[in-house]
Image (cartoon, rainbow, N blue to C red):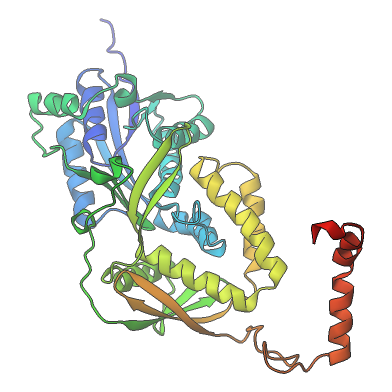
Length: 403
């Protein structure tokens, strides 16, 4: 008697959404794979969502389901450095959910190696950035495994996938919504609806977190060596909890809403709305504190490498070795970034009020800006100015016609 051939194992990066639900069922039912559904959580899933994911994965035909909690890894290996660098893509977008994809991909790849999978699958389409982030991570971390992408390869529509799931007894509600959301620890992205029209913005109804407070209030964020340490006097050992505390305080004012237009990895332009109260407030406070505690050239060169860090994260280049070098520089730059920043919150905006810091370089015995000098004489100031003007005087002596 011939022995039964062993089923191939596939790990599906499972979010619980339509594309990955279809992928689990199709690979189990039509292709005969032994399916392992892995949900990599970087802080965007609630306990209820994770429980529903486990139940649905089993109904869809997965042999096993696992939640891979990589929230702390995401903070320690990337988010911390994005705060150090005040990273905002194109000066606007806090590289929110897109930066999480790399860590989700790495977690799924590690799990696939643990279970001895033959293949890894994800639900990305062929028109976005996530296909690049997942594929590149899998190609590097699990080079011998096949990558399966049914939605992309078969150019499936949402209705195609819904019809298949319904036909096979899975009746979850995946009806077409006006907006699609990606919720993460570092912000929520919003796609669809008015965003598809370049001349329109998002209405209030598009945002998941509503403006619930009027008036204003102060928020105090303390940093130690560039890391968030306390919020309104409460010390947080767990930095994830500190971020969530700032998010709760800012979201009720609708702080952190904006629209980002940028270049995708594959070369087309993309537009996305987002709401990210914690990134807006933490980066705003951190940048303000650095103005007091860093030298001019520390700020300048840190900005240069931080811009590259954010771009490489977006472009799926987290595993590029130079990223570790940039992280080392960013870490060293934070040795004197200590103190408390006072912010004033109000509906849809905030302002920086001041800082309290032992490393405040504004407080100096050499003088007070716009007042009296203490570290030099008037004659020394005039000499400095004359020497500084020398290159300009040389040039315009020969080119008087340009004055």
